[in-house]
Image (cartoon, rainbow, N blue to C red; front, side, top):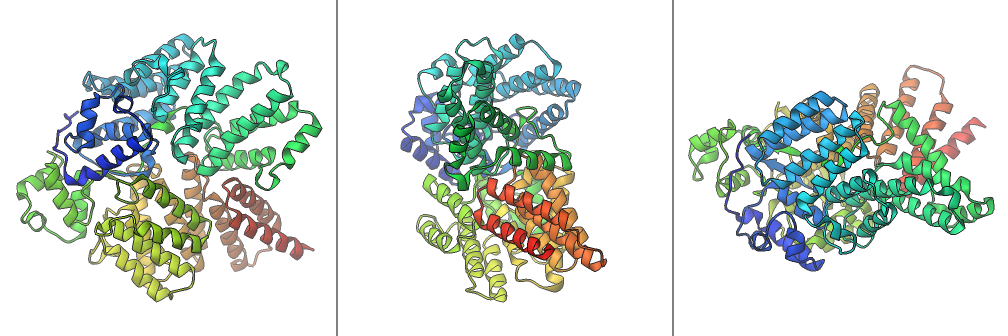
Length: 629
């Protein structure tokens, strides 16, 4: 593998440095605590002051220790980081597919190229060794020792975490949990409770909570069940609350990590409780409660239908990276999209030779040079960015809330939230301006304040904050940011005819390429949004078979990634398109299939706390019943 190149930190990295310092100060985390096992406190000070370069592994670990999920970020990687990510992806794939020999070979090859002081990557190797040992059926002692070695790489005084709190990433909490599960811990239950308290009293975002908390609770309750004969009413009630709390964290994030396992445990607990106690429990907060048996049946059947394992099988999901691209490919593709020669892109910035070598993957460019080239191509100079470029954590939270308001169709509340955001972001940054204009256009359109033609014009204005490519829809190869893709797919609501078809085909072709290369799981978040929009337009245009194929493909990928946030839309789309196909073929309506499908939609929309859609599906069920009678 290539050596990581050290760059002086540029202005483009300053927002990250400020964000890091702001969160650490806000959460009262000391320099020593955040730097633990990764670097010295003085080195961290230099990072926060923008005086020291930082690679992606360290960025991700520092962010996660401060409670921000790496899933929120898009990533452009230099040669070394991309090669490293690609190698890890192969290792994760081998373990997921239970190809033990391939996993051993890849792990040994990967380890041979690592520097001795690369603690994060050595920790990754040990974590994956642990997964391979499990698949081989190795002894608990051997597995526990593997995880213990992994833990102490970044938590040198690991025993102190049980009585002295410090910032931990979900990866580190998972490794600690694995040492509990496979070690001879007399205080197994106590240590699980400590890890739960880390999440309960910490500052982790919803995605991070969903990734680790349900797993901790599952293993905690699994151990508790061994002592079920000693349970009393108080223990039963407490365990039920803990189980439901873990499921609720999954619901908030629209995820299903350990969901089936937890539902099975919830059912077991309910079966041990007196009937009157169960009735009393179910009557509390009845409107928002879930029926464990019904939901488990829906989820299991859904996973079986799409041939995806319903039960969690390994810990690889902690290490999956989203929206990863190689800088060399992005430079070349984006330049060609803009219709620029290498000479035109380089003018006034660098030599053509430097760009040519960078596009061929022969060298990395200096960070300041790279920033200028990326800016000329409408991209952020940062190598890693979220929805907004900001050093204010509250802005990140507000953006997450805004997305929830829009999903719940609370458009007036969302409009107020957007105005609040506007006053806190720098709109001179093109990416931030694009975010604001795109959201403003969508909200005004959904509230009927602008016509379809005006809406398309507004979305085009948002897109052109970063992208002014001629004949975009006819390009074979494109690189688009998530926000650019959303601007384009939103526009479909107001487009007509050939332009709409070309635009839809462009985006679907883009995701077909991801499927061939990186896999759709790396681009899942926007893929879900895009396929929903594409299916609506294709269905309205009478292309029902193609729409259904896209929906089924999207559901399978979402289930594989343990995401169910928008699956109810897709199931209903399939029902609608199948109904239209029946009409076209003059077939008799199959209301039983429609009823079963709507029941799934109701159950899943309730699970992900989307009452607006749950109400719609219930109304459709009533109408179907009236038609039948």
